[in-house]
Length: 401
Image (cartoon, rainbow, N blue to C red; front, top):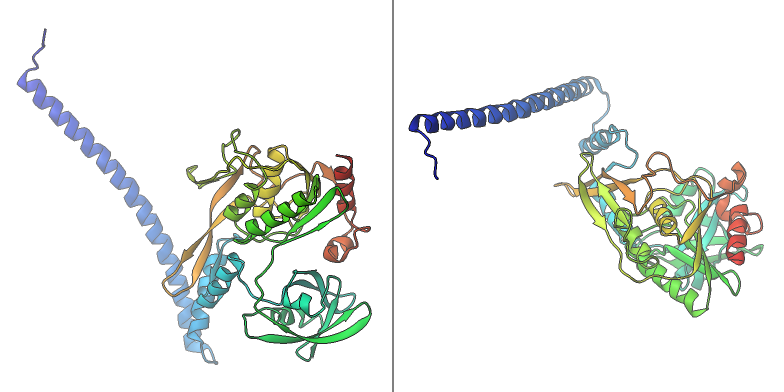
């Protein structure tokens, strides 16, 4: 039987509903208004402080002000003021170079190099196959002593190394020492940056060094793994020591070549979670995987995407970690382009690996802790394999597997 509601009660209910709606709306508006006022107050204070400094400088500074430089430095200072070493402002020119690096398109002569204070030269730690440097007889272990007529010193080494980079149709004159013999060659630039280097250790073990995780890294790693499979290699040592460059999507693309579908833990190779706890992106894998025994060499210079790579391989039970505790950068950055052609690289999320807790701020502890001396760490890329205790431990593990 239907029950009828009186007109008076109906009107009363309508008034109550309207009152509740108004109350909720006013509460939300007051909350938003208070936040807005707080934000406006903070910004007003910041702008006032900058304006006062600007007035003082323009009134009293003796020299000429470079407005473009001033504006870019203010922008850099704002990003630096976040206190986050992974966030940064880039000018338009810097952003062009950054995009080339991200895509693995940054040109050069095809070497990985660093200054060596012992030889007072630029030590070549890796040379890409078929690169201009390789074609001119340059090899791993050679030392560059002079570039374009300028002798290498501790003060100019960094700037001279930058002259080894550049686009096509340019070249550089390099004087280097190979097997105690000094040679001078002209080397073309423009060779695409290589991020994966690999070799056979013996008939059973292979070695793969990944120096960064860029757009081209997964394809290079795929080629390296195919080479290992073609040679019937059963164990692989991955080396990501000192690897602090790269991006989460490219690291997960590499992982996808090695591990099967992520079905446990987070259900993904990586999950990006923002400061409110919202999942903003997930990175999944397919069913393809490899069955080789693996271990990963890591150290305090292993950061960001390289940490995710090492952590997930261990989470899947595919590899153990050898070396020392990693840097502890478990965050993801996003590139936001600006109207002037520049960009801001901003930390937007924390990365959760496949099964482990976040390593952000704590790093990854190794299954096999092997430390090097301070001097050995400084000269890691120049150590012989016999001197590298971390490599030797990994080799012993893979040989016994």
